[in-house]
Image (cartoon, rainbow, N blue to C red; front, side, top):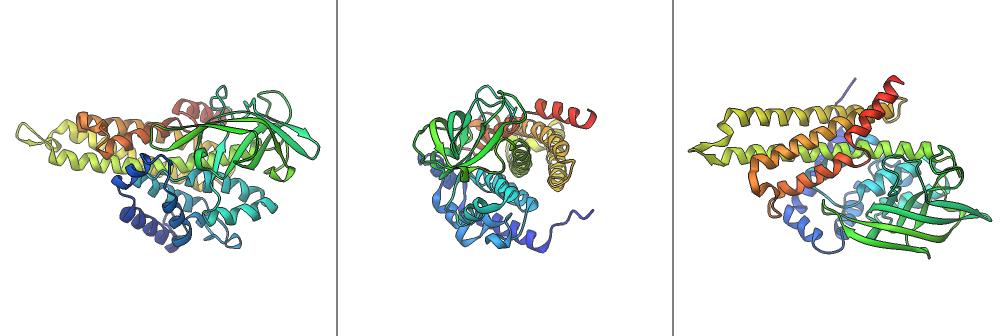
Length: 376
């Protein structure tokens, strides 16, 4: 199998990497984090209009670059390197993936808006009681004539404070944990009956608790078939999981490189701590964790369109989650107390790597899922 990227994919990586290196410095990121908006709209528009990054995984018919999962992997790895907080994951990977999978009039209308940077989508799927069970839903969408009435509560919805649309999972039939009866809706974020409680997240982004109270939805807001959306939701969450694995590869590379550079400069007992054998072994172990994470993420990405998708994604997420913990904690330990200070970038990379450990499923969750899929 050829693991080399095409010329177009290489150009995409170089373009994204160069743009973030030139404009998305750590100081600029921190200005955005502390700016109160949770993102930088100017960066988002540049990604859309000048660079075309938001169109990377979409077909040329919709105005995109004709790419797919590999392009998402490339962009997400560079997002991890630069610690970007703009909503590429929920908007392009998740919402865009759902619309690509279902097609139709809704996809034709919204995908060009995503590519143009005009539509920002937040994925409202998690509920307080749900843990990692995508079918465990108390949010309901009850049939009402040709449409639905949406009621419920969604937790930790990244990008919701500034989103134009919400991609919402809800139960339109069956009982709380049934595999059937789950529907998916793409709705304007300003519909009457929607209220939010916004807050910053530990990794520098912005999220919300969202409450739906008798929100009237039209049938044209359905993504896929009513009551049969769980397989689609599982697919887009697997695609999102592979994407955050790619993000983790980018940020753990930076954590390792930053730690290695620091160890060469920091002196103890009259010599750089990089000359201490125990720390040399530690940094080699960090390097190996990063390289293994990169390899297994590529494998999972290549299998997103195959029957082995779920197994490959769980294998990758469990391995990448361990890498995030090992590399992040050792980076902080080798740096010492300054490793968790707000002034040093390594502490912020550590926070994001810690969040990725549990995003879309913890290590233990994916090990159990892998065991069930591979053996059962």
